[in-house]
Length: 129
Image 1: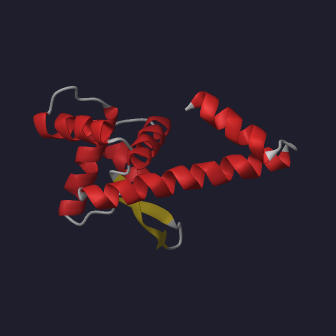
Image 2 (image 1 turned 135 degrees about the horizontal axis):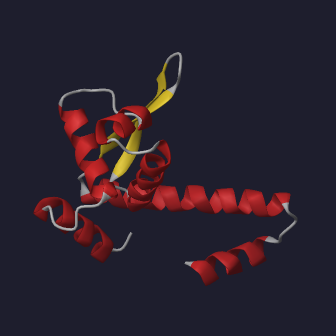
């Protein structure tokens, strides 16, 4: 994530301006973490009265930015993921880079399944990002 993207998101959170689904979800995760409440997709959807699809999409966006991470995926028996906010700029950069690598690896795997050469996949990624 660029420093500008991080600064813009940080400004949105701190100022409360440009409130949108992503900032609402980020704030709710921080609140639930503060009170040690289970913070998974279902609890977020219910607390914010948002559809599962909206919640999942915005969580993905926040994870792409590096400002939200999965804390645990071992709540039995459902194995629900629990989310937490990240505020340390270095941790955010690490999360962002890790998420980008994870997506790149998925694109490579999917490309191989369809018989697309690695160089073509990289070219397609560059063209779209």
